[in-house]
Image 1 (cartoon, rainbow, N blue to C red):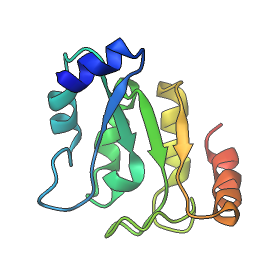
Image 2 (cartoon, rainbow, N blue to C red):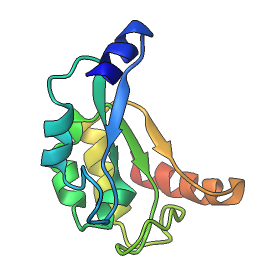
Image 3 (cartoon, rainbow, N blue to C red):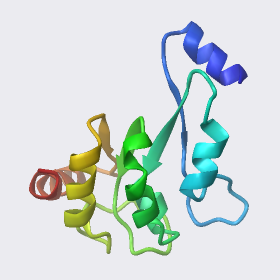
Length: 130
């Protein structure tokens, strides 16, 4: 609530993000993420689809994507948070892109490790998020 109050005072939205497959982490599923942030003024939700994939929960997050305030995308092989370019892992970007495009109109951040990887991700994004 303090963070939310501070966010409101500064005219921003502070977003809570879903986390990776680490048992010690909170917010690994969409229900918990929404429950922790729900109803708190100044607090929103960031859905990270790379993180969701490490838990095989991409479909759950897609089902609630209209509730997201911000989206992060990057790829991996479903085991660890590799932050690979889109298309270099095992996320089905055609399905993800189609669903996000249909249900969400906010900011989507492509996360990457280099300009070259960003170019690869941008090409997949342009193909799948139409």
